[in-house]
Length: 419
Image 1 (spheres, helix red, strand yellow):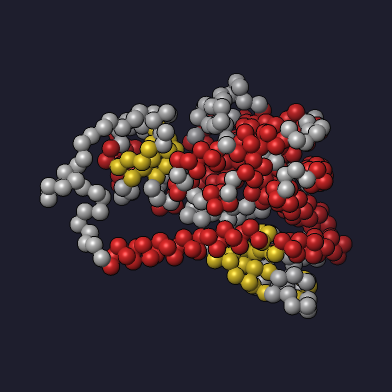
Image 2 (cartoon, rainbow, N blue to C red; image 1 turned 30 degrees about the horizontal axis):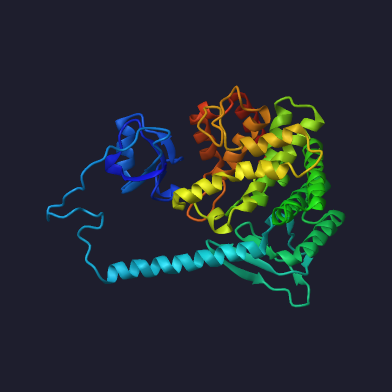
């Protein structure tokens, strides 16, 4: 049972399961670790964070104490010395404003589709509106009103995080097809083809997540995996145009395509040659988070530190829910199941839902747990600033007991081909 305690109550043997602050406001690359030394405790205290979360099931529990008594003879509450009045009201007002902004953000994300800037080319024409996201705010960038829009360098700048209305998806797909034929943007045919494979795969996954029982979309997912496999092999492992690199927010469909590309490429580099097994890994990765279709978007868009115990439990059930949904699909390869069941496991046995270890994890699961975690670390989302690739790899290397070292080495080589 996850518990919230004062940092002053930390002791060696406790397992920290989150901090009452966003990740980028602390010196820690991970907010889940076992306290082994007094130095770790002091480092937590130095951050100024008042509360942390511990998991007594993975470490020591807190020893019950009498309420702390302040110098005024009353139990301290953590807000001692703060006068009642305007400061409290202003904090509440700010919180209410942020809450409303977050609700609008969640609603807008559900209505729009994130697209990669690299899929749009300056000097070309579009017949759909573009939206831009800045933090939690999503606003129109340019609106289509019956007259084609000429794309400028400023519109397609990597600085902008672009989205389109879901109803305009067919128009966007048509634009991509024309780009392949026209060879625009100064890219070669293979690069443009890879961009098309990526964007089409994202659309297919997004549409399947909207209706997991749609057998037609499941078949399209199969075709998307075949396209990813062919693109990786045709590009000789250079996968840059198959990835969404500058990820300023988390979208399940973008994340799923990224780890599918990462995992298939890493499997090939690790010596997997069976097309059926590669296909299984690729499909399993595209579907790895399909169980999240059972989770309310308000929970999915929260940072882990802001989740309640109930919400964490509910979120973690997406793994089993995903495996149950997979049973509805006929003729999927055996390896498809493992990315779904094991993407939150690790070889140290501290993952979920089954606390597997190296000997009990499948090879496809070991690859997916690594690629999934890397892509999560390098993706920004509300209240969390992404790590750089170097920072993410450094952290994973320092947590090498949780990931297969040989797979990690091959994964680094793959990342070297994304530059």
